[in-house]
Length: 129
Image (tube, rainbow, N blue to C red; front, side, top):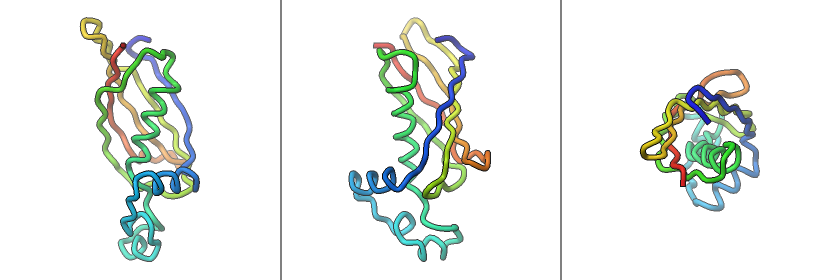
């Protein structure tokens, strides 16, 4: 891999993903579980947990990068717009820098929904192990 390389992968925020997050982490805040509550705050429905996107980044690092000898060491994300159940997301990743002396790759990324609206952006680093 080299600076400038670009990657893209698709995710569906399905009922299974949502229920799996609820079952695993038990975060049942009404914003994420009660449609009336979320709509009362001006949202179209329940808002998906932001950390679902973090999980998608983790999956990307572990399963989609063209190397298996990498370990995620930092991750930073900004949530720009809410994500809803059944949204389709595209994760667009760019390799921004390779630090050969410490064997660390820097990446930037953006998530776009099915309407091509940016819903999150961020960066992460992986270390060659």
